Length: 110
Length: 366
Image 1: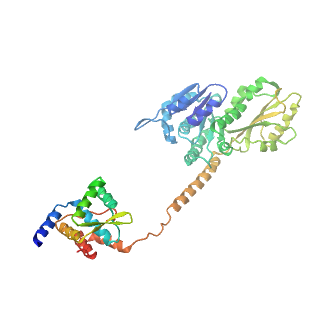
Image 2: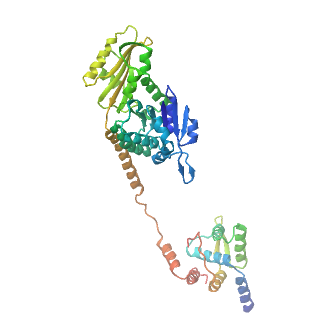
Image 3: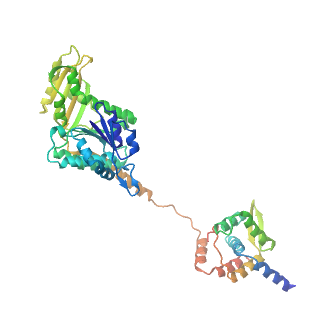
């Protein structure tokens, strides 16, 4: 059973693109800095980097990561904050090793 | 003929009585607004085409003078030029007029030009106006007066306008009324019965052709009061204060049944100052009390005059410098989170890939 799951994980990760990598990366960085990174921040950052211009698209990126259990959305005080899961961390590790660049977040300041 | 140069000069010239007026401007729109018998457009071009104003820059006015040089030099002979000394058009063009007058060998008395110069109120008007005025008085006005080729120069100050919070139209009207009263001296002498002395048009124009500053005043004359006191209480606030007079002229209008011999008191006043005025005493039946119109010619060095302006200009510059120094004061302390700064620096310096793995480990996700 272990083998097919690893294959599924690789397939899921293989379908992610730069916007997903950014979201995983920024969520991890925010958590590390004890900051809260929410969907609006994600929208602002992705818009700033010209990945998209619509909030729907950002929500779709986040939703894809959530259903794959790579990202967790927690409702904290009227805000939907993003937290990377352990699977997400492994996915990010894999993606970084594959050579994805880590783009800076405007909100996190670098 | 009155020649109004520039915006202020044009507006003022149209408020004066008597004879036709000519207005000169760089801006066609401003020129068309002015009431005038004749309008002259001085043309000056920039890289973008014809200019529509002088931007308070007298250099533009000086360049514009070239386009009307011959016409204007002919026109000013024996006439009066009125302009402000602060702006670009009037001051720039008049600068060149004065310069050309100063360079002439000799100008016959009947061809001398009288100048009415409106000076800015240094305390309230922009520093460009004050600086332009300093340049203007210390250079062309000074050259022209020293050459002896100019007629009377009237120095009008804008101060009263600001002190009494007058509208421009009111102020221009006031200047025009005071000047009209002065310029009517020969006409009054013709109109009313002459009692003593005589000032005809020729005498008046000879007086105007003298290269001095002219200060004049008119007030109801009180026979019993010394003239010194009357002059002190009836100053012409529109003009700069006069220096010691060199020459003088007065017209005393006396009502019916008044004793005209009171003019001897005026003569006594001037005798003590070694000045022999030209004068006329006429009977004006329309008056209830005697009325005196008095003009003094004085030769204050333009240098002294400029000093007043320089003093104010320097004070203003000092204030500006002080203000700019205050603006460059110290900034308040900036709160810096050293941990965050170190992290940012590490991010810039180190490899991001390694860093993100360590971050993931640190937050317990790997």
